[in-house]
Image 1 (cartoon, helix red, strand yellow):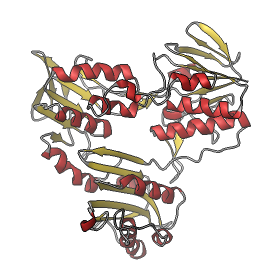
Image 2 (cartoon, helix red, strand yellow):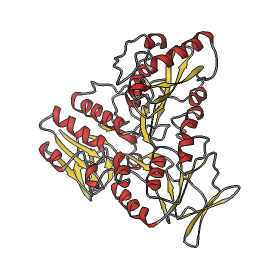
Image 3 (cartoon, rainbow, N blue to C red):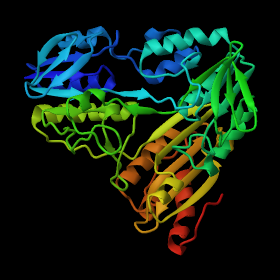
Length: 450
């Protein structure tokens, strides 16, 4: 069997690895227009901050990985066409036949259509290391910046610039809170003070009228004033890269990503799609959406590979959008829907916010803020948000399973948890939050409370 994989991200590497484990004789070719493969883009900010000493530390799959598995990697080789009728693709001007193909096309940064945006002293980060290296060269040259967007990458870049002693850092977000995709405002407020306290000007509900250049500076025009800075960094999301699929006549879903069935087949049954370019179905209401993370890429790569070789034996179950990051000493973790998004989707939800300690203070416990959101009808969780200095990821993973499996809140609160004074509390914080949520489900009370 001949398998062609288009794209060189982690999803593609995971898919190739599983194909080789299941089929020792398959011919596997990976095509990427980039000059490298096997990097972890999530680690780029750690090189920019100096936490990792070099770009070489971002490689998780080395050349040896592909050589030992007899996987043919075509670097700097762009696939320009997929000819489905002949089951071949054109890459670097050459034709390659396939029996099955996988599209791991990734995503591309989105820059908003603001009047005056011209690409001069305007930067983004993507999964391309070369773009990150360009930004690395820029940072030491300047001392002021405007960051448009207030998600994970925006805050990571703000932290990097603050560590470089920038005089002026402005963080602009068109919505009314930090991490607007992941946090409700009542939770985001718990870290906004920390960000402002670092000397970063936080401008929420920001309306950028235009961007211009003046005397070697970039000028951001707001309704009430102008911000003059050395450069602008855009952290305004990314869109699935679907141009090649569209050109090949493959169906694109309503979300803008490549439509797939439960086995990750596209509208062409011989072509699968994985990672950031494909639609994912959320496990809460079953809506197709764009959700782009490294773990989802790895998972879909493994699922598609198994189905490609064994014949559609493993359905992809979808996602509850688990997320975690660390900014300015805080760990921020979420799963499922925010309360505001749940209501927009027509769900009748109640929520509860609780603040306690991760463990007893005498054992070094830190404050932890937990928000749980539950569907009044099903009595199960549809969302969770946690902010603390420690122990967030494990709790989010646990709650993600509960959301995915629609475990009733009452049952979830009665599941025993492990305990030792140095690593947790006997009356575990998640259980405490669930106990606070349950009366609201029973009595139908609205809103949140500490």
